[in-house]
Length: 192
Picture 1 (cartoon, rainbow, N blue to C red):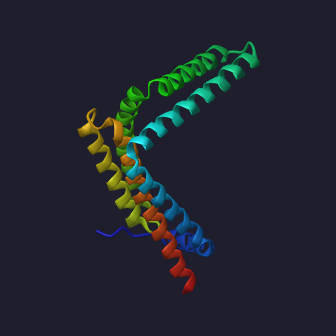
Picture 2 (picture 1 turned 45 degrees about the horizontal axis):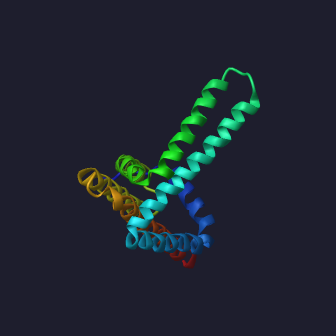
Picture 3 (picture 1 turned 135 degrees about the vertical axis):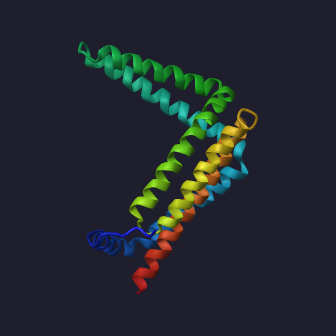
């Protein structure tokens, strides 16, 4: 059964699309860049997995240091101990990820499975409930994300070393394709 879209929603969508028509090149460019980065990640999936873990570890380490310094700088207040402990946890986890990449990749691959499944569910729900322009591609992207999450979960831990880079790359390719299709739709609207 087709969902009826209120007239007000159609007017709002048309208004938003009217203002985005001239920006179709940016959406298409974003899509192409995401697809190229995704292809690189697929081709060099072991390296991409290691790089993702190190980058995430460095970000956690930096965030933890900033939080510890901030807690110490602020001095005595009711949230001092909590902020200090959270900062210390960030530092410890960041150091673990940078120092022991192999184990960190395995842990992150399990977390990535959960992330893909949850993000896919939200993408599908948004696509079906809002039905924005290009919603079919967002629906497909959500289904692919759920499939990737299930595949990671089923192959874990045997495929943990390469799966992060491989599936991030696949996800980026499909997400990039969505942006290219949205840009193409906007280009057609601007020509009309």
